[in-house]
Image 1 (cartoon, rainbow, N blue to C red):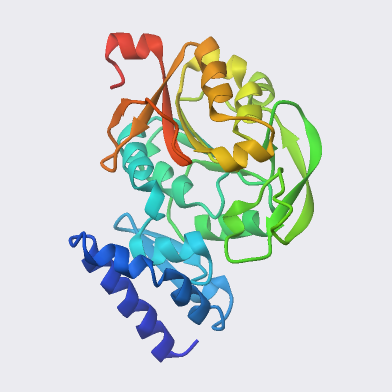
Image 2: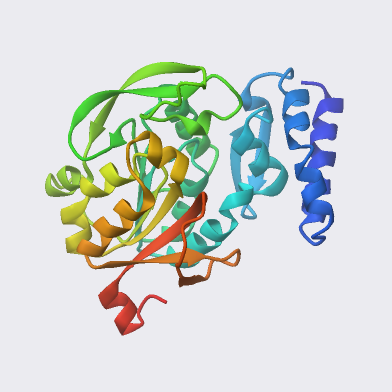
Length: 299
């Protein structure tokens, strides 16, 4: 990669950083995001660019990838602002954090930085290439207490076929394929959080992040005993489209969590929770156990 290309990438990143303070400029920049990704697609593998975020964390990223380019230009995925800020407040020294759908390690690193000393992070990423990049990104950062698993979580141990998009969004790998999207199939191993906890592999769970492209209900069903025992905070992505491909709808997830004593909350961009009313097409929710809500220990 030439010095010119690197300077161009850095210049675009500077524009995005400046746009954070200008509500008029930012939407205009995002309209050009796809063109930026296509431009950088020709300039080599993901390892060619390093994104710096959260002051001192680093990731190898590809600027041709949808999510990864946003991390480079904007320090986070645009739609995850509230989730990122919530996790920064929810994870602290001693926290046991579970990252289900860790991708290349963005949320894993944010949690690991805050869980020390005394805490731990368990990161699950089943796709072979993505898991390799997760490991590489962990090696870029001087953080301890992270255990990674090339395993997907579900409602029962099994093997399954995951579909990895051929296009510019590898983070959309899913067990529930969209027939219109070209994908590369890969056989993966599935396990349950309950079995890993019962076996002693995972000792405690305080906070979970679940982002598995429509497979969220199965993950939570496979964690039922864990949720009953530890009552962790659960941050969960909801997409009506993705859940629909799995034959589910968002209300099924909230109904399941209600049987375990959990209430759903929406997130604003500051990471603050508020009462959830209507499901959007795509959003992040936080589930808090009703006893914690009543006591005010997690608000």
